[in-house]
Length: 518
Image 1 (cartoon, rainbow, N blue to C red):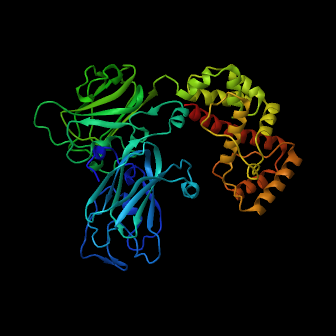
Image 2: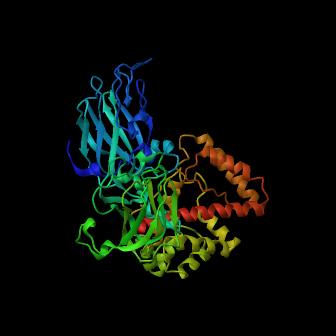
């Protein structure tokens, strides 16, 4: 147990940022949902439910069989976990003797299905819990996680679970969208590094996801009686140029600021100076503000170039619900794009062939290097795919295995090797990707696999090309149903559908390629 400074970091599991308790072994006395509530645990000594004394937390029944109870929490903000608080406030006679914590990575949208195949890592070994207190534990696992599993031994109640850490977005996806990125979003890794004061709402609220439901979910310093404004400094998720600002004073009516000043600085120019003491701030915006209003500023912003931090000053004081800053990430391409641009001709061909088996597409993509960034890579890949035409599409179709084809034998290759050095490495890597994409197919249902194989053959006999479906996240029954639905279509319509599925596979594989090369 420790008093480490991780408590200053955001709670990645909080309900307000999208955290949720999604699965547990038991919740007979008190529901698991309370574990991630933002408010402190409450107590009502005289309140009794039809199942026993009321508790503001999660509480399991007395365990009569071997084992222990557990609860899985989806982090609202995936990231690196620096510390946890297992809060047993008001929990006395039912407090578990010990607890441990595991974590895993599940980035698919259907996480309840993915959890069945997840690989869990223990980040907090079994540790003793004290009743009626906040049990604090530092965590040293320096990896990004999306879910945690709280284990209690053998049973009992826990009021709250706080998971403090640093938000780590999936940069490949963030860069892949192109256009503006929300640079000051907590969900993208931004952080409030300093503020002049906070009385009611936390300064972290300023960059939380979603709209504030009341003034307590914003930032509200106390009334200023001395000279100077109230201020807050936000470290952006990555250096960039700010193109649009939103200052939201909703719920602040009699205590809204009169004016604001927003400034920016590139911390790389002052690397040895603490953030609050940095000199060289450049004004982005100076404007009056109105109560209970969402203010959006675009043409009013000054262009000051790349910045890494923004400083918001409220004149003379007042409260604010949200600060949003959209902009363009710094122009340097992601490391994966740089490596792809730097591969020799044979290496680039092998790497890109893992993503699409069309020779014409690969040659056209190689010729279009260097790619400015990931968004440009995806945009060019799609344009080239539609340009190369039917014969190139058919060649690409043949390079993909039939659905279920990887379930009968060994899948070779690894994802972390040196990409693009030999054609064999590319083939092995693509094979591993195919296995991953089709993991919704179960080896334990041979009848379904046989039916899928027979339907595949009927499809080939009718159209002259293999059935294509972007199978990521789909189960075998869903794949078979889609095949049966599409087999009755005219050939031209089905060719276009198959090409669209191929392009979706290609796009997903390009994202994986960039991640592996990073």
